[in-house]
Length: 175
Image (cartoon, rainbow, N blue to C red):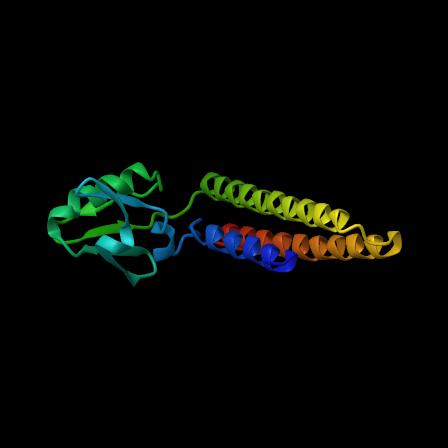
């Protein structure tokens, strides 16, 4: 896998992680990291239930097996989403509370931390690429050109990370 493909994967990873930070609207992706203890085995919530969005302010989780309702509810509580699940015996409803200013700022901090993690990943990819170039024993001018190409790549992808972070911050801070 070449350097640019690795950097693209880092951006895709950032995007998938940013989606899990909620912005006041119901989004099934916010539950993507939740693991439910299903007969003693940690299982992704999407594998044990249908997740639907009946309206912009709530999620509805309908388990395939009604006996797993309690386990799903417990997993949601343990995920610390800041949402109190409502179990009516058939489905679990997650009402999205309005975000307070403090909560919005907390989410912005989370988004910035994810962006910083992505930049660290990009720097590691750059370091690996630079080491590979130096191992090739190219003539000095070619080596310098290759290193400059890698530097241009990281600058390009750092800008993308910054843009994604700004987009998410704007989304979170808009009421």
